[in-house]
Image 1 (cartoon, rainbow, N blue to C red):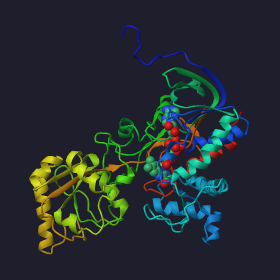
Image 2: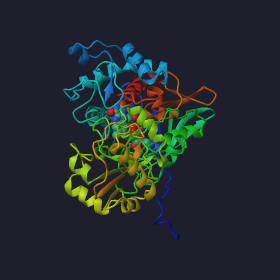
Image 3: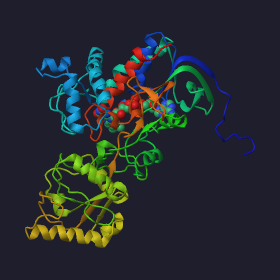
Image 4: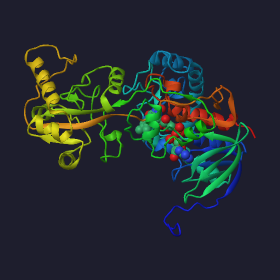
Length: 485
Ligand SMILES: Cc1cc2nc3c(=O)[nH]c(=O)nc-3n(C[C@H](O)[C@H](O)[C@H](O)COP(=O)(O)OP(=O)(O)OC[C@H]3O[C@@H](n4cnc5c(N)ncnc54)[C@H](O)[C@@H]3O)c2cc1C
């Protein structure tokens, strides 16, 4: 390259000094920065995205807390201790009990804070949420606009601090590496919007850069080589986690990865899966279809009532990829749609061009189009139909078998086990100080949010609200009292 004109230019960038550098202006980073600024700290916040908000832009927004005003108004008797005990029950004690207790203790104040800021709660809450493992009492809360309702009350507070000059916000600016003197973190090297280097000196660096579920490579490294399909914030590539690992931070590795079952990659080849486009599977809808893997073998009991059993089984399906297969009779007779968001014209277009959607007049042609082994598929459907016709139990124990699958045309839609949150993450102490591999805090380095990994507080289950609520709570606690200057 003669003059480097087409290369991103590496300029000699700015040097900034602050008391606190927050990496990531999302769920945990927003309260950390807001409260640190209110205490008079000179706060610098860098975010790889072009606006603050992080995963609040796309999450369902379920919070959980025990002992809130909203519960008291409905006569629901609850407390942080009962909340923590319920999490221990749901997770079989696989979450960190000390951090769970702390998160539950802090949670009611988070709900009260958002309440005081005028969050537009959905009138259905507090409720028991049946989409996840269920709490014993109604203690889940969400806004009418999902997590956007949270962003709508927090981002203006952040912008007010930016406007008042108490926060310097660097959008489209990524963490490149942490800087150290001896063991202590003293700042960071950032990469600005034009590829320029920005040096920040700060006695405290807070990593709130989220998980790694936008990076197939890091996800595979942290999750037993499994493939990533999901709909995470695109900037959440695990760079903060990597930077901390590079200076010797300790990792709590994945022990209990659980995928969500079912999701259609769209656009093709993107690894992106939009929740709104998911098929309606158990427990939302009883199946009329069968699920097969690439070999054509049925790979999941389609009407498995226990969600966690099915999620665990999903991790054993090759490439966490399966096809939902049905016939004309099922298409005609099923009482509710399998693909609610794929309406007539959209679905028709998908049959014609989308590689995840296959339709054919016989099983051989369907298998070839979809990339499934034809003999395996034929045998699986034959065995399913024969057991049904002869009144024998289904080979996988399935009970809801309304019709055989025999009437052309046949349909197949490729689906995946999908991931919304990172399972593993940084090891921290109770004060969210990042620990090194010897178990000692790394001076100057803190972390909160999904960078700590979902399993810290949810163990081997999905526990409602236990990602967003503690991200807000630990972030706020750092800003309010945790950091010193
Ligand atoms: C679809 C979906 C639904 C969910 N629903 C729920 C729910 O209902 N309840 C619940 O409790 N949890 C839910 N979760 C999980 C929860 O939303 C997240 O775990 C939580 O919001 C993460 O907060 P965070 O602050 O760690 O990260 P984020 O809010 O994602 O913020 C991280 C920020 O860091 C920035 N960043 C990343 N890398 C860098 C870098 N190198 N340099 C600078 N900035 C960087 C990002 O741009 C982002 O703005 C859901 C997740 C998804 C994806």
